[in-house]
Length: 360
Image (cartoon, rainbow, N blue to C red; front, side, top):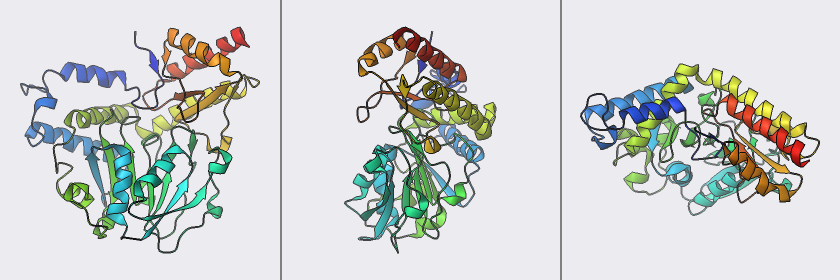
């Protein structure tokens, strides 16, 4: 029996997707070979790639004036490429710092741009998001970057900040396609697939086409988004199996009702889990400002760290795995992405209630 897997990424995948991939592993659609064995230039995989893009555009309502790329390298690689592609040498880029991955994004671009932290919640332990009115934006900045959802610290932007004429770039790795999103409010959206869209090893980049006209900085073709757009994400051999799995996951999401349906499910799941924490009388605690709590990643702490080990052991025995918090924060973390069924969160909530009864 499969466990309920609360891993932050690589994360749980929809069981129907895994079963279809299992059925098609040896041979894809009477092609005589697995899709992972076939040329990315062949008609079979070209069909898979085209369907994946069309389905993702439908799922997320991506406008035609945005290019969609499917790349390797993860979100961290894209963080460096943003500066190379969209900022001139020495130009400033503004960063709003709300957690660990925002700090990582700044680290990646420091060799290429003047990365200005225009707002930060670090002094408060990344438990909130600085109010838009407090941001000290830089005149002439290439872009403003935010991390839409911080996987480790469990904070999420509840709305899209207005950055005026400066394009807004956002890391959506932990929350992409979890609710309806006005893509037209962004210059670039990028996301590692391994949380809501599929397996680890492939990254989605959504770029407003007019931004591709920027000269950027000297770079090889493999680091140039324009070359990847021209090459239809096949400038080099892409991670074909991962792309195929992403396509299956997106089809599953569409069949389940799309982002509107998942927004409802995710709201119910997160509400259930936060209620269990908040109503525990301090046995469990979440330290994030309730106004910006993540719907995707719920970090929490037990009132006594001596209980951490038995909590994890007993949870695993109950079929609830990967609940240990990130080493940067400690405690526990439940990641409840689109593929986590509501029954999984119900099981976790019930276990937490029973654990408190026995150990409180």
